[in-house]
Image 1 (cartoon, rainbow, N blue to C red):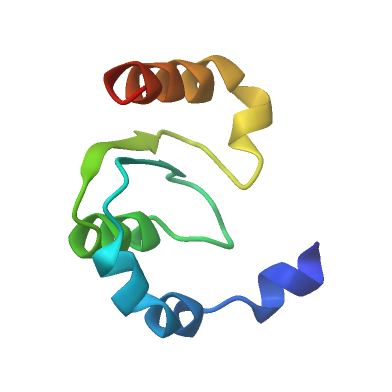
Image 2: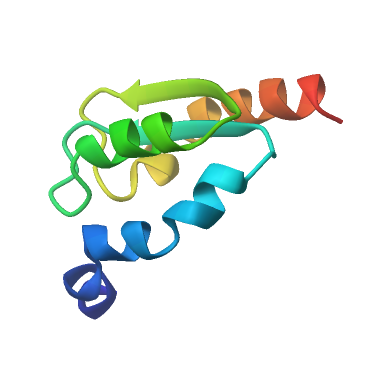
Length: 86
């Protein structure tokens, strides 16, 4: 996994920017604020480049595997999104 993290860069998002801008599906962005591999700026970039943002949730103190530590937050956010858009 660390090889993947080391090989990931902002260039990966920029390479698919046109596709992201065209995406019409509703989106919830959940991002850890203390992630050493994926800084919170990535969430802000997505927020500014996607058109159908339903929610941006900054997970205070969250790191790479925050969904394993706070599954109720992830499940709850997805439940709300999927209820609005069945």
